[in-house]
Image 1 (cartoon, rainbow, N blue to C red):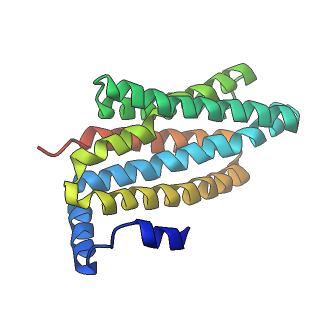
Image 2 (spheres, rainbow, N blue to C red):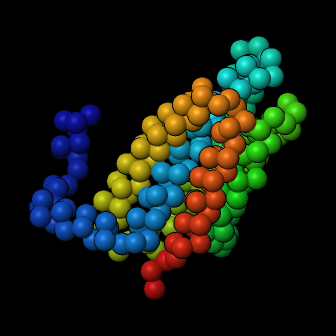
Length: 209
């Protein structure tokens, strides 16, 4: 594939041009806020989706096979949320609104999901958090064109992806430490606070004039 790309793709721009574009993207406060929002979302998503089977088995007594099927269905709801965001934005809904809805859903779902609710309510909270939360990634990418100059879109996209990867690493690691030390209920507050921070970032992130 690398060899084929070498023949098929145009030549790279000069290194100085790439560095200049990267500086422009990093200099955009809106772009940095979007990257931080993606970091927070990725951390939340991998905490909820990654810990859901263990929560269902260890707390509610489901078999591992059943817990994995339920978690897979919840992750499917997240995929549907991503597609729904694209459809809503295409119909004129502001990406900031869909992003805000995603983080608000994660705020609302944190306590019933982790803090000792009945199994049915916890499951409903998981589907709600992952399904409505799925509005976030597509909304972030749809907001990028209004947050960074056109010449800086490529490095700005890279910034978003790196922020997402850092969130994927940091979220489960921190959540695992909290659950091991203080139990499942203790994770509800940091999850809710992280989602609230994402909601605040959305309020601050406005398109460039």
